Amino acid sequence: MKNGEMMVVGYARVSTDNQLENYSIDEQVERLKAYCAAKDWVLLQTYIDGGYSGGNLERPALQQMLGAIKAGQVDAVVVYKLDRLSRSQKDTLTLIEDELLARGTDFVSINENFDTSTPFGRAMIGILSVFAQLEKDQITERFTMGRIGRGKAGYFHGGGNAPTGYDYIDGNLVVNEYEAMQVREAYSAFLSGKSINTIQKMLSSQYTTKWTATKVRNVLKNSLYTGKVKFSGQEYPGAHVPIID
Image (cartoon, rainbow, N blue to C red; front, side, top):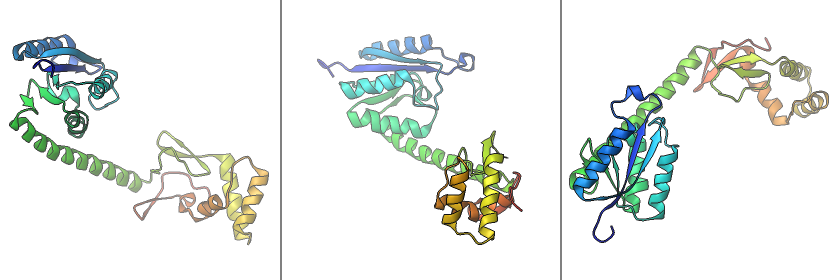
């Protein structure tokens, strides 16, 4: 606050598809100006992110605004609507509590009459926190159910970290013949009585694939090569082609 005046910044955002939203950047900016003028607040600057999703915090103008708040005294951030800051309750709460209030900067949303400088606005932070935790729990539940579903359907859930002998392409394990040949040799050598270290040295001397004793051991213990997938201790028939019988 300078000379008794509230020094504030505005923030406006639209998603990539403007037609899906009822308020353009220009409309948001005009409402921010009118609101601050009515309050006799000094609107230092309005930060604008055009074409950015509210589900992502890596927005240029948002990050510039947070940098300005860290660098100097900004009494409040004003937005037209709460979801302009973020569409995620969790991210909204984090931004307000950790980035704004922690630095003495209040948050005002015109549409919801949300103002953290008032008792009601501060109470709303608690309500927002409850919904943020609910959102987090729902995301975790959906993610876990999705992975269990993929496991039961026989799909590998290791992401881009494909096991030796396979490539991970479009969500599926595809046999990599060069590596699969080495996996078969490892099993054959082990069944003939060769030690882990001997197998490692043999494979390393014949192929360009990097082998360690730990890698050989993990390959020999992995039922994935017989056409199985595991998730949460349960084993399911895999959708991929097995490398060994």
